[in-house]
Image (cartoon, rainbow, N blue to C red; front, side, top):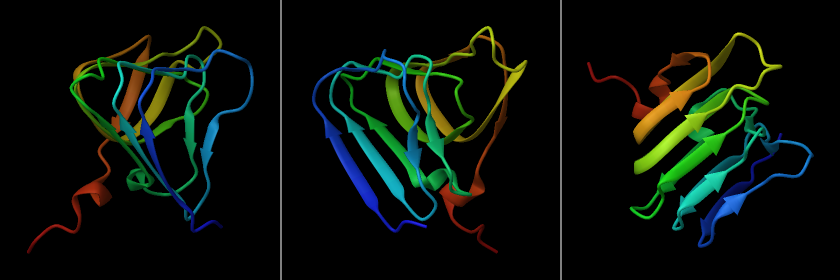
Length: 130
């Protein structure tokens, strides 16, 4: 278990095309990404959030951020707030028929290559008031 918190301020485009592993958020850790540039493209890779809450991955895209692409290497679990971005969760030809996703995605458009089973994570919104 990790208690690390990472905050990334990204000022240039991101495009990870080489073979390798996913980005991993270990249990107990949290990642916040602030994207100031146009493109965040992980191609066939994803962010493997090994926590039980999508609150462990927070992505903020500024007005300049217009393109976000995640691969299908692992289920998506996180919060994306990028109202000007076209958000794509791409399913490859070797992927399962559908992709599990949880959290919240706010973008200009949201698309996938195949079926996505999406679950809203209520932990992002705090406890319901009574």
